[in-house]
Length: 617
Image (tube, rainbow, N blue to C red; front, side, top):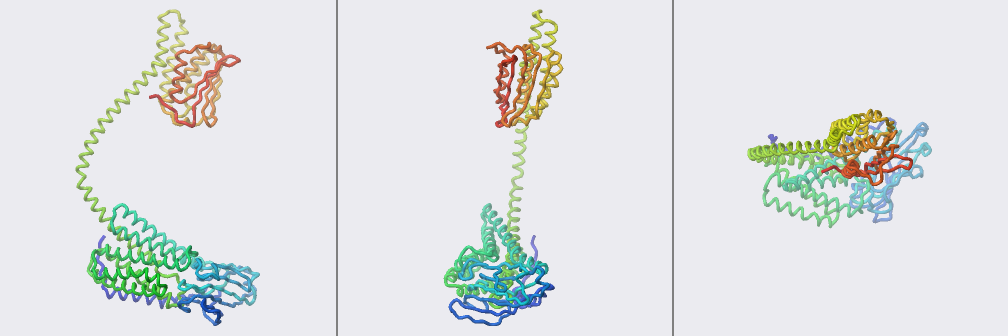
């Protein structure tokens, strides 16, 4: 979406100056006038003992907190001890009390009435990794409090590391807890959220660049990733590098972010004047030399950078006074916000002792910069998407023609598949009829033609044929792998016939797991094996009892059919038994026939649970 936004250069300049002055003058007054919660004492008056690192002498003076070391002792490092005295009533000593120190660093040691309460970092080791950025919350045991108390806070102050001591709040835990949570939210949670947001935006732009290889996405990704790392460095409690190296790393991130921001600006605006490019290149090339020269050189380079950015912003605002280009307007506003936050933070760190507790506004400007980058990248992506839609529309007709041809071919293939499926199903039905009902019908015909079989024998053969047909129909609706359902179907179809033959049926089937990897073909093979085993008992065993048991042991499903008949003669192996073995091999099952010592035969069938069943081709 495009809209008009006229921003004259004079308006941008007044806006930036107003933001800086408001931050430097109004916010400190608001912070000083803020009333503490009821029952809370704010300890500001301290006896301050200072020892500089280059000198063994100590100086003791009265000081009103906050102590902003970089403002009080410029370009120097050392140690300081603030002694604060406060009174506690008897009622306070009976209730949970706490100390809240909004900011304290770099390293510290805190003691109350000679008893150590908390430490952070190495107090005697200059430039160690501890930073002390989080608000410090200390619960005070009632036994430590006296009528007159002495609180000592010792710190190690490193050069340009925001060392100092904020005013200390003392009071009931319940009264201070809300303030502590608010400070945690402001100093830790929200900056973490900003870092994460910038990281997500940077990764998103990086993925877009990886996909489309456009310079805009690459510079946007580098800009946001540098912001994310730079803001992360602002809330880390303990860093992993010694201070000079960490300072150089942070300045490197700042340099990379500024460089990426400038090139992103050039990408959004298009070609810039050659003189501007020369000035920008000279400033960015000087950064590594300034970092190598020390903090004072970095400060001078930063001042030059701020002035150059101000000149560039004013020029861009003049160029955009009549523009309708939304990405340029987004970029201009983001540059204004980030420039104002940077100037404000530099001035607060150097010129405003009362703003020692403030965490800086650059991190909040990073969030707005992320929104602006998303807006710019989103519009560029929308433009690319529209171009892709236009290109797609030009190819739609050809695609439709190809789809029509493919649809015709698909219909022909589906017709062939239906014919093939019908042929396969017809072949299966014929095979089942030939192996089952067909074989029994042929036997019945031979019995009638021979004239030697009785009517009862012929009827028995016809019943077997009918049972086989019914079971073939039942097999079409059996769930794959449900052995319980298959055995139940067999019992339903054959139980009456078994009892009419004078056999006692013993049925012991446990709840079986599903047979993994089975198919309709495998279920039909299994049904045939069990049916053939029962038919053999009815026809040849001359048994009085038939027992079917089924159980599972975690590795296989075991089905046993045992009769107490005469058994089979050694070496006898009819077509039915051979077919049973063939079908068992097709489904990956183990089939065994055992002659029992007490008489009778047991058919043992094992269906593996750890491998898929095989099916016939």
